[in-house]
Image (cartoon, rainbow, N blue to C red; front, side):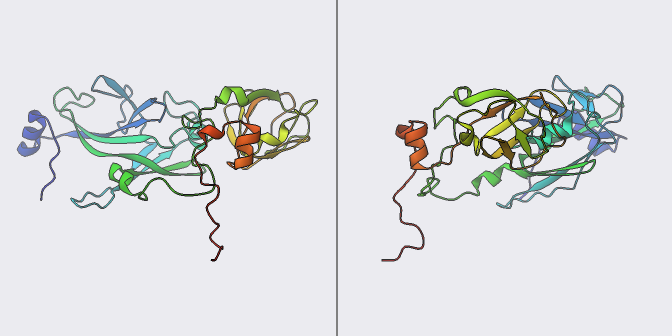
Length: 292
């Protein structure tokens, strides 16, 4: 069984005729919020224009691995490697910090191969789509960011039935199914003195609901940590403990927002958030160590 990919008649003729060609990879990343990033491995100063979009030249910082393709249900994978500092990708300031904070979590990836008879111009031949998938993993080490994408048939790899009988609520706090409004449980604060990369003290009197920030999210809006997001491990009258340390240590007076969390228990849903009607859990399922 052969697998065919659409190509323009001019490109087909050029490939069959052995015409000398220039080639470059085109990458389109689409975040779950619908934001697009168009990058290419072309080394020209002006990038490449294809389909009405300008693919910014990111050579030599953008590379990819080989990828495989079968006509079976095997899931293809692709590694995309960014070797760059924070400010070296056009149109994507602080790119490594953004990726670390979840920019490409769940993003879709489209890899195309562009061919040219005239360097820098795709008008004559166009491009062939080679790989379409979703981001499945990200590793950051020094100046290297490795993004692993898997084919979209990976979405078929899930438990059936999708509804799992479990004690904890299957909804995420303030998502569309939970129905609560995140803004109603988010407040702005400033860091006090004595902060560390993993502990943020309150500035002034601690909020009365400090303990409710456990499992919540903190986002810095000013200072050296501006734009960084972390999960809150727990909170008390002294401050907030973070699940993972920040890149820098916040200074006293740096502003941040903190969103409350939810431990997904029946008591919290009913007594704290009064949202029992939207809870999806099976609270009386016997624990696995119960014997009859």
